[in-house]
Length: 127
Image (cartoon, rainbow, N blue to C red; front, side, top):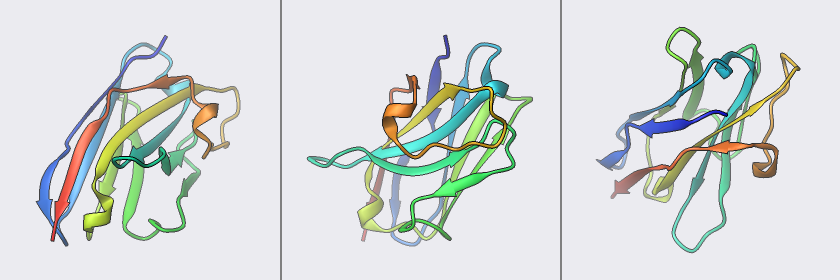
């Protein structure tokens, strides 16, 4: 079982930056692929970024590449999402997700590949 708790959301102006954190409980963090997704009102959940169990591989939504960076800290059982040059269309609830895997370099962009989800943190970007 993995429990995920996100933090770091808030209300910012367009062009600002935010760094989201997701702390994972349990001893399996190091064996999980981690991902970030987001969901805006009346829209489907959207893939943002994923990082492999090893931390070597990362993968991003094409529309977000270059502005967002995913990283992980094994000592802190935490995965981060650094978001730069925020736009009003980035407004959404951001969710952290995890799935244990035996593969060191795989990443997943489909939500149905993930077993565990956090409660989400709201990010609001105003123009």
